[in-house]
Image 1 (cartoon, rainbow, N blue to C red):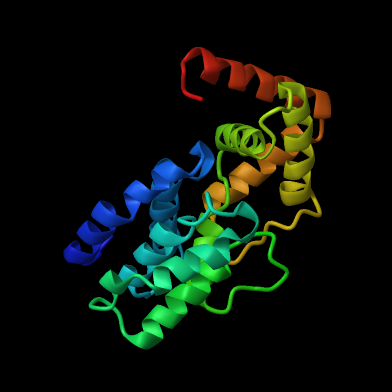
Image 2: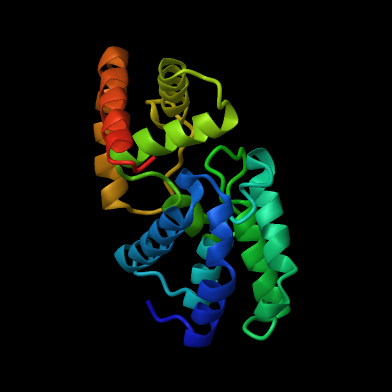
Length: 214
């Protein structure tokens, strides 16, 4: 990762703390994962991209999630575009591409990202571990419906993951991604048995609760 040190420091000091406002599944741990995955994809696919732009897109992509999860990509892009602290690091054209990439990152979007930068963050934003899926679907579901029972949350999580990662799911491939290919095989195997999936999520969530991790 060869990112401008001043830019990196600006984002770490001024943007990362904002993620404390998001629920755990879209907090700073997730952002760091997306940043790291973005650069892993660049390396695996031997892409020659502006690394400052890649870092910035990944760093801002969920910043507005706590405001409205359903339109967070638009809100996050708007927050980025109004951040005057970025003006010294990028041209107007680069800022436009960054804004569009953030707007385009949702896996459920019907349209393909407008640039390779949008495809990078969209790909990096996908889950690539079963444990992450089990935790994020639970914590996000809990945020949307605090009164729901755990069993209701597990049922909803199962339906959501089938729609996203099932054989006809909407999660898309844009690049070679060895980690994601392995994950997709594993999650589809787990989702093929609903009872097994719910038992697995229940056991994992109870483990996190006992460890005070959620």
